[in-house]
Image 1 (cartoon, rainbow, N blue to C red):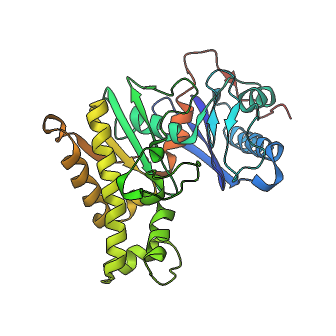
Image 2: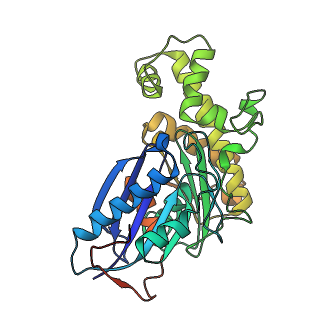
Image 3: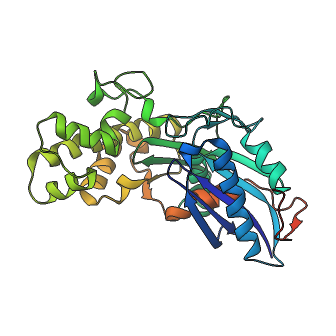
Length: 315
C-alpha cells in the first residue's frame, strides 16, 4: 500500500496521519504544539510524529509528506511568511525545506485552513463538485476556494481571509489585523463572547456557555449569537454572488453549535444571494477533525516516485 503523511499544525496541537489515496486516515498521532519553545521544537515534533507513524506501519510505502500549517505559507519557497503571536518566531521558518531535509521525502506545504478546505473539496462534502467554497468559523473566520481540486491560494498564498472583509455589524470595532469593522470581530467565537460582555452580560466560562444561556432563555445571549450568525450569513451570500460555487461547505467550531446558529447563517446567506443563486447548497463538513490532515496529504502526487518505509528518518 502507498500512503502519504498528512500533518495538521495548529497553535495548540499538531496532528499527523497516514492517508490513503482515497482520503482515508489509517493511523494517527498527535502532540501539543511546543509554541513557547520556538520553531525548532515545532519542526522536531513533526519529525517525531512522522517517525512514530512510519514505525507503526512496516512495509507501507510513503509517497511524501503534506503539511497544513498555521500562518501564511509562500507556495513556492514553502516558507512561513506571516504568523500570529500564538506561534512566536514562526514567521521566516523554512518549513518545507527543513522537513524535507529531515524526513528525506517530498514535502508540500499550505496554510492549515487551506488544507482543511482541500480535504473537504477533494475527499469530503465537496467530492465530485467543480467549484467549492469552504468557510471555517471558530476562533477566527477563514476559508478557501477550490476549483477542480486545485486550491486558489492567490499571489502570496494568503487568499481566504474571509474574516477580514467589511461587515456592517462590526462597524467601529478593532480587528486583530490592525483594521476595523471586519467580519471576524463580530462573527467569530471570541467575538460572540466579547459582544455579550460588551452588552452587559455576566461573565460566562466560554462561548459555549453563551449558547447554553441562549437555549435557556437568555435574550441577550440569543441576540449576540443572532447578530454574529447574520453577519456571517450575509458575507457568505455575498461570496456566493461573487463566485457562483457548486456548493458552500461551512465548518469550524461554530458550525457544530446547533440549529440556532446554523439556521440563521443559512437563511441570511440565501437572503443576500441573488435570486438565480439563492438555491446554492450550503452544507456542513463531512471529514471532521481529519479534514486538514487529508487535505495536506492530498497535496502530494502519489503517482510520483514513492519512498519505502524504513522507519528510519534523518534526525
